[in-house]
Amino acid sequence: MTASTPQTMGQQFGRRSWAEPWKIKMVEPISLKSRAERQQAIEEAGFNTFLLRSEDVYIDLLTDSGTSAMSDRQWAGLMLGDEAYAGSRNFYNLVEAIQTYYGYQYIVPTHQGRGAEHLISQALIKPGDTIPGNMYFTTTRLHQELAGGTFVDVIIDEAHDPASTHPFKGNVNLDKLAAVIKKVGADKIPYVSLAGTVNMAGGQPVSMANVRALRNLCDRYGIKIYLDATRMAENAFFIREREEGYADKPIAAILKEFCGYTDGAWMSAKKDHLVNIGGWLAVNDPDVYDSARNMVVIYEGLHTYGGMSGRDMEALAIGIGEAVQDDHMAARIGQVRYLGELLVDWGIPIVQPVGGHAIFLDAKRIYEHIPQAEFPAQTLAAELYLDSGIRAMERGVVSAGRDPATGDHRYPKLELVRLTIPRRVYTQAHMDVTAEAVKAVYDNRLQTRGMKMVYEPKYLRFFQARFARL
Ligand SMILES: *Cc1c(COP(=O)(O)O)cnc(C)c1O
Image (tube, rainbow, N blue to C red; front, side, top):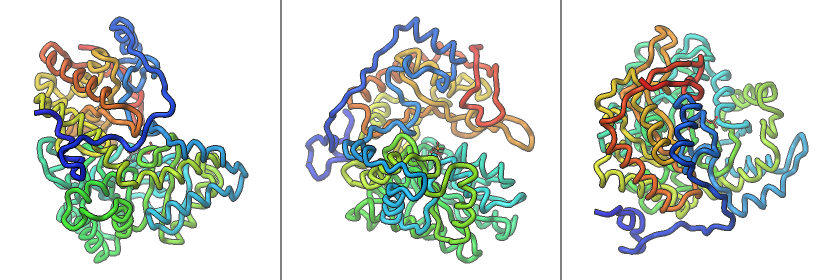
């Protein structure tokens, strides 16, 4: 079987192929270093792909964060930057775009997503609080913990099973949530931390039915819902594709309906919004707005720029509108799916169904002989770079960090390597090369040994930890 993108993505064209809704106006040369150079580079990087120099990388699938290609309209928008310290025109364009497409009332700009996570965590969480959510995200949970809260995972069990083909593996398990409410009391839960297309579960979506039911449950207890909207536009695509009654609705309408069930959102604009930097916090409650707007001037910048330049805000405002275009999203997710289908056809274990922004290789099943304490996913990412200059990211025991109470490694069920696809950057040929490289590493799996950690930073250790071969 060949990759079946025409069937899955191009129904409106019958059996014909589909193609991206853009053409290339400018190119950026890339090249593949020799095997000896790659060997030296990965050793110098302590076998951590975050510590490689970008120039030593051929196809960079480390992240989809800030790596998108901007459109000609966004580049033109940079020239319209109004760099006034206060009240820049571009800020008001940004506010209007967020209100139009997400529907929230009050907007606080931030330099990127974690800036917004910091503000909302400090504004809402008191020491001793519990924050239930549909699987942790690294920076989100850390900001909740630094504010004195404890994150509790209430995602459905299927999310922890890489082989489960549940269509909405990002859903909240309402029974688990009800049990948490019963245990700690609603007054100790400032909000439910809900993420669209759950990153750590493999980019898996939340259904509209689930957020509606979540809203009902939370309303009974007076609990707020705040959304990590980082990849919510991608989530809307999956709702349209998989949920009854949404097949003919535009992504923009689905996005707005979903956000309507929540009280506010934080955003890493470096993902869905097709820009290289930026973020925002959006809320409907004027008191929460007041406290976030007061804090932003301490940590980010004035409340009309929050760490972004005027031109950045203009490119972002334009990117928000482009991100919700149906043809853009079909091509974006279609390319990820193309790569996933090649790997599945070759029998390589990946998280299924393929999510929105990345392919997640199942390192536990690829390296069955390497125990989790010897970092199978970290090893796999290093091997992939060595084989072909492709840069991926560990999403397993290193990313999960240590339990703040016991100091032990947290051993997540999912031990994954993420091949993250930047938006509008690589071609189908790059996806073919990537698939072949993964296959070569997979075929060599029994010759591969695990690693030990030789340097461990205190916070978010996956960014800077160093390893050595066993
Ligand atoms: C990237 C990301 C963040 C943090 O955003 P930054 O812009 O990197 O600070 C938060 N949540 C999710 C789901 C993300 O993917």
